[in-house]
Length: 119
Image (cartoon, rainbow, N blue to C red):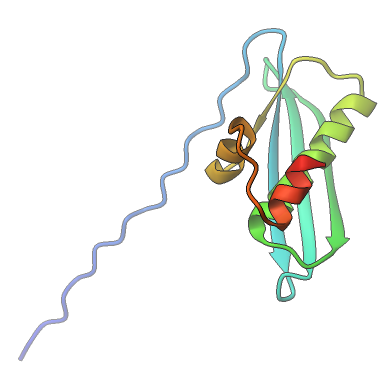
């Protein structure tokens, strides 16, 4: 008789939220796709250096896009919200490293996403 091998499960490690430096605001941005990538939901949360919630916002959009494009659209909503609420020195945090890398690069990809970034 053989025993089933015990599968080792690696727990998901999430980093704790880190407060921004004094005088700064941090916005966490997240986007999710639903219904075969035709409905986008974005969420953003603005907190000050004490960790106090300043503003939370979420919304839905109907569109067909990649996850990277959706995260970028959420970032654009973050920028609009930041400007309309007269916030200054705001850091944004996202889980999509490829978004940050693309925005930090001087090379704009030739794609639908690249067109969004150029605009």
